[in-house]
Length: 330
Image (tube, rainbow, N blue to C red; front, side, top):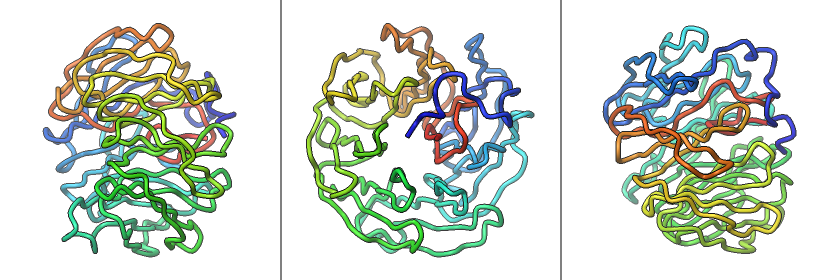
């Protein structure tokens, strides 16, 4: 699944861009721009309220900031590393694209049962941003998702429900679900396309779901508050941020076993990798910092203060032919 995301495989469209790390600060309402060569903040710009994630467009042409509190997407022009314009969409917590690039999917994440009717996915035409369909997800806390190998369906985590929901991307309808318990958060397709990994913050580990049968086949215990997922450039390792334990677990994909746990402190949340895989950038959601880690040695190289509640950061550019979402290219 990740043959085109190996180190150095930059698409011609982004090959000439200067590498930069963009960090959305949820509570301070801005984006910090960091030069990864010097670990210094080289820019900062305002967004709307509650910027949650920074998402590369499917065609790699631009970046979107999901300003959930302002019901808009702030568009970033990568060459300028600055906000260019805004697109109005209701309550965008997260943003994804279908494998064929035809649809943009905005995740509206409302956590309580009373908000269930506003909990779901808004499907848009990716080019025109015309609303195609609103799909209510019948499990609270619609949060993260990933696409199947052929792009025909996605698995959506219901953070506060303990369920993961299967959605047909063509019909834009719910076609299945599986209960995992706890608090399912991040979702990532395995390199061979056979499984979905689901970080379960409430259970302290990763649920492994068979992509064909939608059955939970195993559970990998990592640490308290398992939250974000990332796959190494060579696709042999799955990294898990344990937000409440202040650690990162390393899982060998082939054996689905934990081979190391790094104590990095603070509150590790979401992660991003440099294009060559030599740096892992992790947001400390509740500590106002980013840590840069050497994934070969599991040591912290630098800690950088960015703003209040740094969240879904992106290192740009990334290898890959197209983007599915923050940290997911193929």
